[in-house]
Length: 215
Image 1 (cartoon, rainbow, N blue to C red):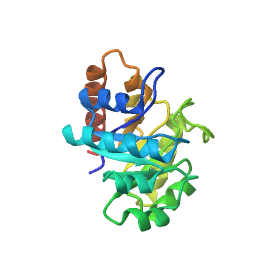
Image 2: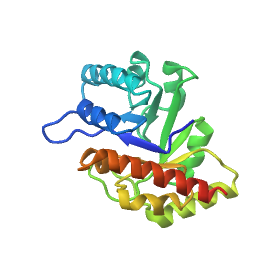
Image 3: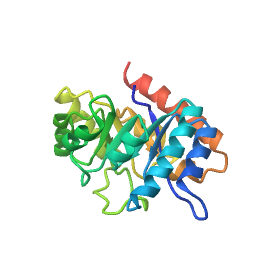
Image 4: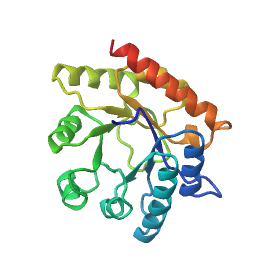
């Protein structure tokens, strides 16, 4: 089951990815994606191993962004691949066929590509401008999600779609109303004054809107 709330790890000033993950888990997140771009493999692996232990303590899923070898070595639950990362086929050769694999998409062509590659879910975005990603793809906004979800339904594509990219708490309901499966959030959780309240509210919004849209 693909969660409706994905927390994407972020390194705040004077902090670490691991501390942000620990904070998110302690505040109720159950799906964590470790995203450490352009970092030494040893550092990513060490962080992933520690994150695996934390996720085990909270019965949470751990997804590794971009590093299939790290995903395998850390016994992660899944791997997420960007459009410029290793191919899904090559990653499967490393991690096997049981591990969850998600793939980034920005257009209908990307979605069709990801479906053909056999990913388990699609990270579709960005919703709006975000500083956390270099080489940002064209911004989708609500209309972009509505259009792409409508095209997917026409083609009877039912893969879970996770909206990602600059999503704040106030955006969650309207984003869910486009028909996506869930949302991925980073800064809105990392920098929240009261993470438990924010996370609980996001979970409530994604579940309520998902049920409403699919009934």
